[in-house]
Length: 316
Image (cartoon, rainbow, N blue to C red; front, top):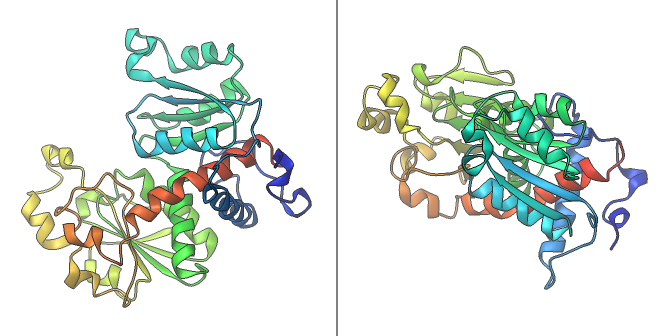
């Protein structure tokens, strides 16, 4: 199967040659990408999980911040499509000696990189990199701002379970303030017809979250929810006085069996990971039939294959 054999170019809308967030994307483009991810799942179900779609392309994973799921998922996705992969870690690079992001990326660019998958603890760097490099840049997480491929795999997983997201209520619970996952889901899910309600303690809520309704009332957030997404409580935030104590957070906001019962019967449970069992989520729920946590990880590879395909060889 060649690069043009994965999806029909005549049926595919034009795509941005980057994925920084969803500002430059529309619903038709997102839905087409998710359809491509479904085709990639079929590739991954084969005995030989590989197609030549990106033969000749070199993809760099440039991670200035630690990652397990996202990095491995992207690297496997690129290799499944026969791309060459360069793996770069900021912790072992010249950036620890004071080299700037720009100089590091421009140095890599002299080596013939075709696309960059970039993660950084500083918000906005992927946008700058797109201007510096004039090459496809995929944001793998920048500070608290955005994590678009996580939102795409969340949407893919929800659609797989619920069907269309039109009219569905998705509750996101936890440390909303510091969550790039919450921001990207609040941007993406309404594009697909969903309503998003984000809930947490007042000190862990932003002043506003475009695309979502904010509340401190957990029962209100979970009432009639079609799905519940739980976010990691970042324990380090307690050192800054944002939470009185861990037991008080657990008592008021942990998702346990009783509280999950406030949502619609059988509402699926998601968590982007890494998870603090028995903190933001009752540990046994993560392994329950309602949990889609492992399914999210499995779907991440197909979704990231679709992203790489569209930004590199899809119609521009």
